[in-house]
Length: 230
Image 1 (spheres, rainbow, N blue to C red):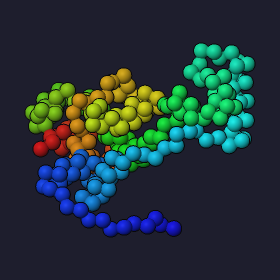
Image 2: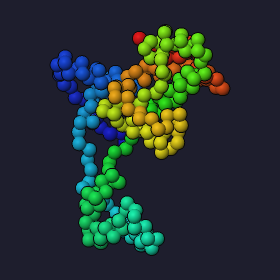
Image 3: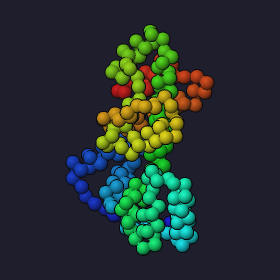
Image 4: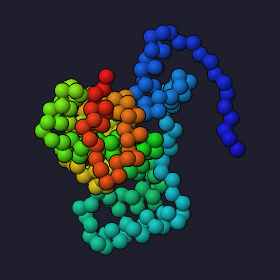
């Protein structure tokens, strides 16, 4: 059964409305004002989270068995303390597990739409950098001139660490932990300025090109279209 919804109207001043419009234009799908307000409300509301970690009887047994194996193998330098976990479970102090291992028992989960957007951005920039490397000196000079100032030293800069940390985290995990898009390994990936709006505009240009890039790369004309962000 679909969740019930209720119509809700509100009045806002022009300054707040302008801020909402600016925020929604930076999103990958440019949501409507109503949808943007809904998302912003969800972002601002505290996420409901239990103060304790819940285990079924079977899970308690498995955790304790794993703790015994952990001790038997003498993994004393690991990040997990089996003695502490067992004592917390046996004593009914499940709340202590969340306190001590907040990184493990946290409630954040990446939005699949954000993951899809980051993958598309990385794929696009992989083609851009590859195409740039293959350009002749003459074409690079042309690109620098016609796509100024973005046609020189063409390189993926990442996402803004202050305002786009979720996207930057997804990109880093894909590149450094999953060995995807190896071209970008060991880079800082912090652009130090907002990029989502720019990348979305570039994707709007790139997506029609993508289907034709089988066994070939971007030429100078396509790179100019992508990088001349006017």
